[in-house]
Structure formats: structure tokens, C-alpha cells
Length: 224
Image (cartoon, rainbow, N blue to C red):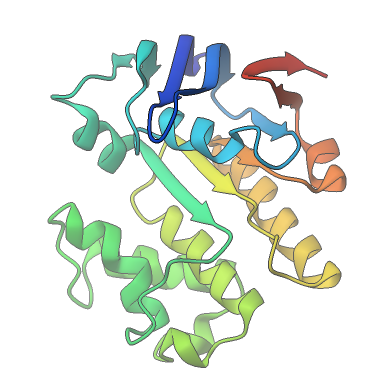
């Protein structure tokens, strides 16, 4: 099976006010279509690891390869825009924009045609339907419930057809029943579309649904 992400000896430290070594030589391989959960106690650096692997933050050392491209200062933005998508605990939607406009935002950033009738516009409407929110297309997202906002965020993550989705506590702010819906959507999309999913979570049930589970502890990643 093809590899979509390879991380070798990833290290990350913060030096202010004192040096703290967060990641101490992380190795990880994620294959296309694989779902991976990373667990660990609060403060262990799970979100930092996700941000580094998702190219939002640079590592201090090590090598990161995504979609057969070694990540560097020069191609980081291109790789992130073309191959990566994110789903966050706090949604990060533009609240004064409609659900449809939020889903189309990655396509606009990529300078694709998003006018009605365009491929991106049709795809966004299809994604809204798949997450059960086609009737909310023209609603400002500030009017939506937490579960609806997260479903919009998932649809937005898939707008540019990424190779890998990074999810940071995607159901952390949601009730139990809504969390199960979000888990089904994320894992279902990954399997049906052949996307890889790397999720940071405290939710043992979600982790158990993934193909691979790891624990981050004292800067090291351990396979469960």
C-alpha cells in the first residue's frame, strides 16, 4: 500500500522561557486509506505533533515526506494546500459566511473557480448533502449547532480532495450522540474515498475504530 506520510526522527523544542523538548525523535508512517489515532495525557505534545506533521509548524530537525514530497521551507505551503486538510475541535469556521461559502474557502485559496455551476461549487453542494446539511447551504454558520458546524468543517476539509486529513479532538466539544455521528463521518469518508486520517484524541472509542493506535509519552511515540 502506498505511503502518504513518512516522518523520521522528528524533533521539536521550545526555548522560551526555558527549553522544553516536546518531540524527541518521532518516527511514523501512514499509508493511503489508513486511519491512525494518537493518544496521550494532556501536555504531552499531541497537538504540537499534529501541527508539525501537518506542516503548520516546522520541526527543529528530522525529515517529513508527504505524498512523495520531502517537506521544506520552499514547498510547505504548496503541500499543505494541495495534499492536506484539517478538522479542529473548535471548528475554525468563518461565522459570518454561509455553510457553502465556508466549504468553498479552500478552493478559493487555491484560486479555483467557485462560481455557481463550477466543478468546485457542485462538489461543495455534494459534500453538504453527504454530511446531511444541504438544507443549511445558505445559513450563516453562527446559526448552526456545534454538531452541524463540525459537519461543515468535515465537508470543508474534503473540498480540495486532500490525501490526508488531520483531526485535532474533532468531537471534543460535542455530546456523546453527536460525537458518534462525527466519528462515523470522518472514518466513513476515509474508507470510502481512500483518504488517510490522523486523529489526535482522548476518546478511546474513536481510537479503537482506527486501524492503528499510538500513544505519545515523554516525547516518544509508542505503538499500541
